[in-house]
Image 1 (cartoon, rainbow, N blue to C red):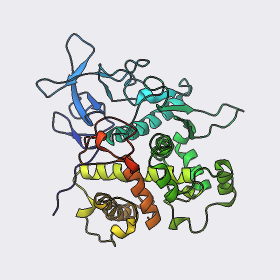
Image 2 (tube, helix red, strand yellow; image 1 turned 90 degrees about the vertical axis):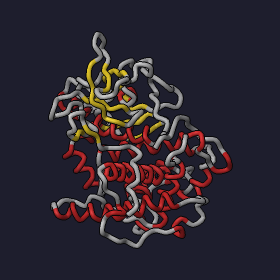
Image 3 (cartoon, helix red, strand yellow; image 1 turned 30 degrees about the vertical axis):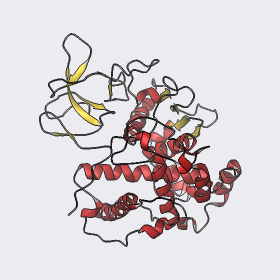
Image 4 (cartoon, rainbow, N blue to C red; image 1 turned 180 degrees about the vertical axis):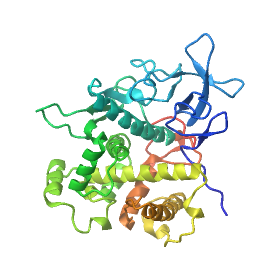
Length: 392
């Protein structure tokens, strides 16, 4: 049996006492050792204080690195990330790479908003850890890159005021914090006919719009995008109005990953991008714990090279291994969900056109095992739009 591939962003960790600890933990519940997540190394580390300083160090190595703990550790956010003292954002000197992305918070004197922030921050850390693991550009629009950076505004609709609408505009992602309330989100999910609606899903979708601007717009990927997803110059407002008035076409499942994806090429991209991140992170988690679609006893008809005809990819094998393993793994996970009497874990069916769009996202992201970001190439020899090491 083939070895299970290494995860890009690992999700399995252990404390120095040997007990399992998890991505969101800030303390081992067994031995009470402080824990912190290093996003560059993609590891959750047991910590101990550096005597005579406000710094912390990894508990086990002889020559450990030194860190600060994120300033939001003791806030409602409960952030367990670490800050490299040499890489502190100029406007947020003790905030981690994830927290410095948040530009606006709701009124935290309202207890419900503090709880909402905690849920949103948990989802945001999951998202950002994956983006960093994939080698994508993740810089604060406030503190690091004021022209092309990313920022989150977590807003609440004021009494009698205009409703906050979750969305993206030129690097600013606005989130309606009431989406963090389970009853509100569930009500909207039913009203809009969506089989899947989560905070993490919202964040992954909206950040997809941001990366379309960063990685596709005016790049070598732009024309291939239009051939596959459609021409994004179609009237966006009219397309959304038509979608909400008339709904998705009856055959949307033959071409898109979701009904909403059928509304406009930009939404098709964002839904496909989010779907790709769902797949990769779930597979990373499964592989971290020794699970993989190749090891389950369930045989689907597998996608072959012909499903990616005319993609221009000379080596589609790694992507096909991802998606075929994904289909087999989620088949079992759906049965486990049914055993518990809850909704299917993965309520989707991938059509060949939707598969080709996922493959396009895969190529734009440029996942390699391993390969430095400098080696990523775009169509027509265009240069990569981001820098940094791809170490997975």
